[in-house]
Length: 608
Image 1 (tube, rainbow, N blue to C red):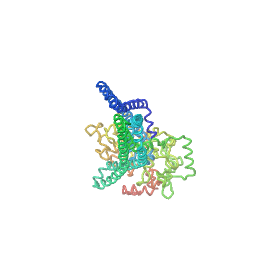
Image 2 (cartoon, helix red, strand yellow; image 1 turned 60 degrees about the vertical axis):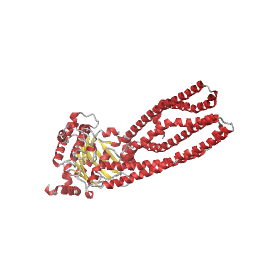
Image 3 (cartoon, rainbow, N blue to C red; image 1 turned 90 degrees about the vertical axis):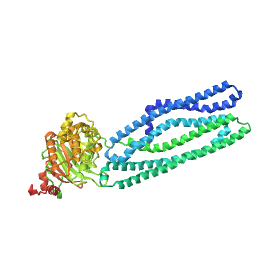
């Protein structure tokens, strides 16, 4: 909560002024019952209409002042809570954008969405309520007690007799309620996850007629969240009746004691009436406190969850070159040579690259040096992977599902850090790059990339400083220009969320256009040509070779035809290098590649 309250510092002067106005308005409001008492006991017996009207006018004036001051203070409180929450949301969203993939995996996407929406709303409610009632309620409570002490100490002590019970109820509810609301927020995370999954997959749900199945799954999570909210609500709902019962009991005792004291002439009737008015004000103050406690209990759990993200340390900060070398030396010392093929044999190209005799245009531009990595730090997803790629060359990566193809891409862009070994670009360990410096090198198309609801041109530009001519050239190279210009508004055509109104091949060509538009140094196509027909695929590869020959390319594919003409082909099997070389070398030395070739083309080595 301390981190969240820090967002109020820029508004401390406005808050101070608002609290002063609220304080003044509350004090003025507290004088009204005292004026009423004075009128009943001292002014009315004089039978002076002028004085009665005068004091009545004073009461009206006090009521108007209290109203105006309270409205003004509430508006200022709303301004502060709105702007502070806006800044919290902005900082939280900005922090989420810079979380590492490992941190995102730890929090989970549904939880991050819930923190950005539900949790920030709870904090907003708390910040506004604390300013509106955080001053008014204590002043009404303490001020009411002080004034009643001046009116009649005996009746005040009768009223205060129930306060220990009220305090005990407040402490009990706060200790039980906060953990329950924390658990509720975790259940809301699961609820959001189901909604997110079902909305994203609504088409496949309909296609497979699984509406009832998903409805039941949603019902279970929705019911769990509702049940937990009911339990938390029951605890918090017990607060108001319990407090009211104690206060009403105290009020009855005050009335009985007051009646006795009036009958004995110890208290004047006006004092008793004023006293009952103050009891009502004190009652309202305690009810306000109980409401604040309920809101605070929910907001406290939300504030803790928000702070967890805001205070999350940056996971992938650049390290010094010396530190990167130290890590590399420690992890790769005495490591066996990689690039091995079946049975420990090594392909010609892999051996040539390792020995420095291969055809390298400008030395190794991309280098994986004995890389081992595990997502969950248990079973490695990549084991001792080594390969090099010269500037302007193309690397094709093949392998079965789960072989580690996309993991290579993730490590190259430093979405995760290697456990052992090193990944280098242009001879420099990726861990020494800043995030912006590193990612500006890449043009990337992922397997499950996204398209925003915007024009086709803006989806390609993607907020970068790219002119319209570059956009058209990139679209032409990606074989997308024909279908784009065939639409009524061309590049100004607005596409649906996630490109729902585009075919699979159109989406992929649009995304490839985005990756090419800024002419990156390294182009990554992660299984992003699977929806293209063979003719379009061949035309695209021809355009890449002609217009982006200086770009180092990494193509992850399932079809050999997509990487057939790559300068190097990497075969992965269960996270290990099973083959590395050109098509001609692998067709002779790598059994896995031979099997893929035979299955996909129906040709044997002799039939090539």
